[in-house]
Image 1 (cartoon, helix red, strand yellow):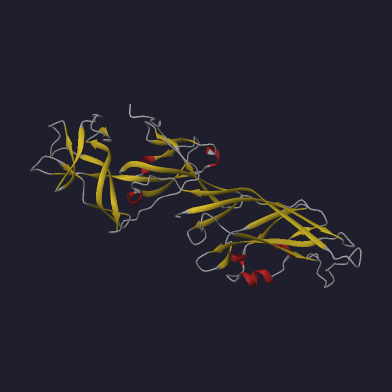
Image 2 (cartoon, helix red, strand yellow):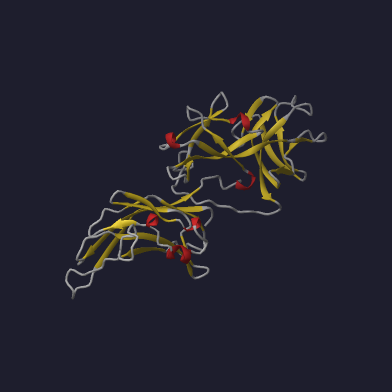
Length: 354
C-alpha cells in the first residue's frame, strides 16, 4: 500500500445508570491503530473533537502538550473534556482522517482500530476537591456505563494518477479564481496533465484533498473541471509531465527523446515515450497506434526512441517538444502503483475484437 488515507465516520452512544444524582461527569475519547510490524498500538496523531450538551471541545490533541501521550492523558483540564449525564447526545466531529496508511498498518486487507473512552466521575469545572460524585442510587447495584460505537462510513482514499509514468511527473499547487478555474500560465513547459486534485480547509483548518476526474484546459489556458465538491475547493494540486525539447539527429533526420532530464533536483532517465507533441507552435497530439495518422510515428533504434515526421520540412531549424516520460528517477525504478477509492474507466470497453 502506498500513499493511502483512511476516512472514518463514527457515531457514539453513552449512557450511565444507577447514579443517585444525574450530575455532570467528564468525558473524552482516544483513537489508536495497530502496527503489525512493531506489534504495538499507535495513537492517532490528529485532533479529535466531540460535542454534548452545547459544549464543543477538542478532546484529543496531545501535540499541544507533549510528545508523550501518557503525559497528555494525566492532564485533566476542563477544556479537554465534555460533560456527560445519564443520557447523552454525543456528536463526534466527522470524518476522522488517518493518513500514512501502509503495509505496517494493513495486513490481509484488514486494519485494526481501538476506540477508548475516558469517563471521570466528576465535574472538572468545580475547583474544590469535592467535585467527584459517584453515589449509587441503590447501594448494592454498581453504577454502570454503557457505550455503543457504530461505524457510519469507512473509506480508503488514494491519489489517482497514471501508473505508467508516475516517476516523471511534477506536482504544483494553484489557486482557483472566482469562477473556480486555475490559471496555467504560471506553469513553465506544461506538457501533459497526469492528475488533478481539489484542496480546501475546513473550519478546524484541516486540509482535505479529493481527486478530480473530469477536467480540461480551456482556450484561455485555464484548468476547468467538474466535481461534486467543486465549490468547496480553494486550490488545485496538479501533477504534470513537463514539455522537453527533442534532439535532432543530422545523420538520420530523426528526433530523439532526451536521455535524461533534471527537474526539481531529480534526475529522470531511461525515456520510454513522448506525448502531446509540438512542432514550433503547431500541436501534433499523441501517437497511439499505426492506424491513427497523427503526422508522425514512434520508433526505436540503437540510438534510442525517436520520432519521425511525415513532413520533410520539419528539420534541424524546427523546434520539436513533447511531454517525455521516463522510467527511472535518480537511477531507480520506483514501480509506484496507486490504489484508488473507486474504479474508473474513461472509455468504452470493447466486448469483442470487432
